[in-house]
Image 1 (cartoon, helix red, strand yellow):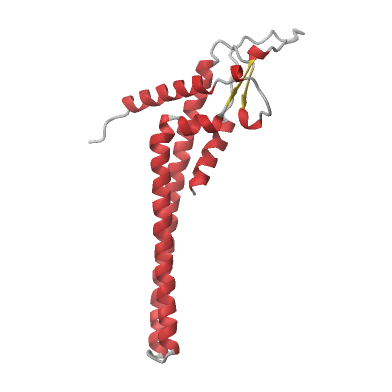
Image 2: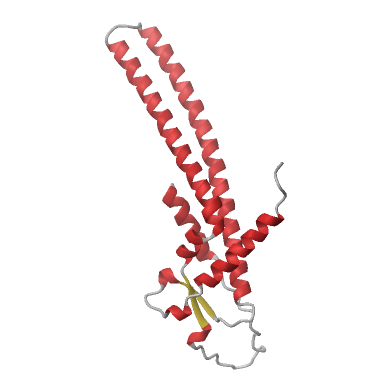
Length: 195
């Protein structure tokens, strides 16, 4: 699940587009654009994610929450398996009646069903928290890209995961990271304080 959260957020970052604020040629104009290296930039999205303040605080906290839930689920499931094995052993040794074994098994099955419903609800809440975090990160990155390209300087901003080679001079990851962190700090400052 830890890698799932990271992979999901990185994948969501790939979906964030780059808007081009440069003036568009008039309709019908046959203008050919010449693209130079200064028109192109790339971003190391995975690095941007793991170095961002929002991920280091909220993302890591959510990851720990997910891991704790998974450990709790595994422990509970092991407990049920142990109970079922103990019941089977008692029955096979003739220490309980068939009726008592059936009643205990039914009770155990009901507890397992209740637990599974509870686990599914908890998993749904965690999935929703992950979805909201992904959307917030996407929004911050999109706003940072828009801000860094407000003058339309870049005609193309690439994700470095698809990049085979490129000059470090074209890497705008640190510039974007700075803006993302500033926007996150402003978002936190503007949020109402929990009392």
